Image 1 (cartoon, one colour):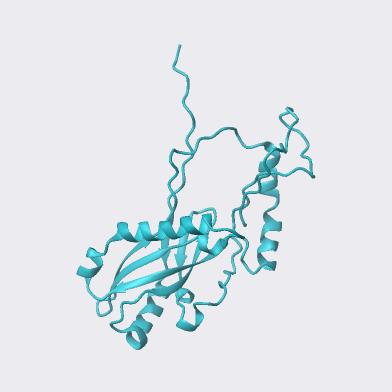
Image 2 (image 1 turned 45 degrees about the horizontal axis):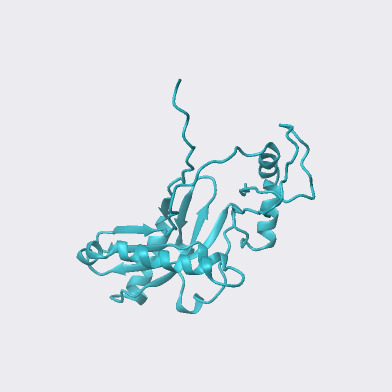
Length: 226
């Protein structure tokens, strides 16, 4: 007989970074007029887009020192979630190449872990972080950059324990308009994916493969904006 099938491991799609030309145009202007040779870390607003698993920056991502404490600016697209990150531009390509990227990942990962384990209500914005290292040759209009997206590594891979219930999938697909409406009401602060779980309860105790969902029972769902 064939050997028993092993567990199905869940995989995460790698993020694709997109730095729009308007981002570099704004940076070039700031570099010439304001930043010059200062290589200090600069705050940025970035956006994660649902569906395509992409991260992007544009001309509006740059923040001044006065903007650092303000709330995140939502993106008009309800499927895009705003997040706060940073940019460090090196003055020479040699400095960029020598930058310790592993140390940066470890530092940002530790900050993420502390945000997850901190007592009290979690700061959602602190759970979505990014860093950009760059070198810019303004005369040649050449930009080299590296993006960092810290994430926690579980001690063992996540395994699929059961397929999604039909009513859960229906909720995820049917609530697209509702999620977009909530995004608009909350000024884009609602994460584009969320999970609700209540231990000790079962949203579908009925073994029927096509049951009617109980509207009063908690459920677990991933919802994505349109």
